[in-house]
Length: 215
Image 1 (cartoon, rainbow, N blue to C red):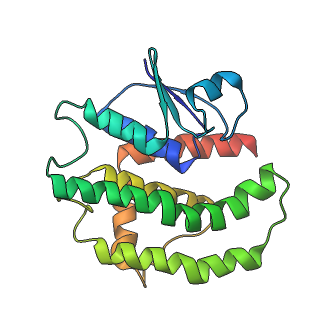
Image 2: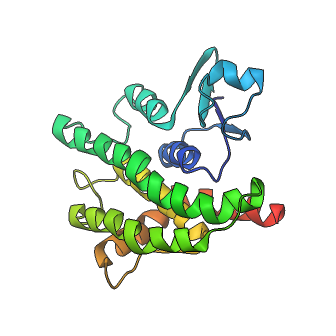
């Protein structure tokens, strides 16, 4: 059975887990923090990135690379459209989530408010966090609001674009923030719909239980 190495609350780990749950692909999860210096982990993830994916004697790391591999072996059962232009757009949304959304929702808000102070003894700077919420978050939300036309982002079906786009917004919720539904109604409704799918709901239930146990 394939193994995913990583921390469940990571948006990148959740991306791969949600993808595999959606497709009904079994896996085992081995908890590993990003940047771990464990030699065995570094052998399969030289850059220290999570998640890492191991399938027999095959190992790769980076969530987008893992999804690309899983799509290439899907035999028509994957989460793309089959249309080259639509699929390129799906991977674009994956990149937007991994770069712009991650920078704002994860680095400037979730990490700054939750992870840094709790696990790395970093000072809590609510002024900087609020600045990101007031100035940076609306930029991300406005762009995505402009791209939503229906229930899904690409090709009228649930794809990797929806998984990748939604996963950092889960962390935004964990940081005590949410999308302003009055200002961005399409995005708020879209996220509620995607997070309600079993593949996300199951991940989030497991993550919340884990966070409650850790205090």
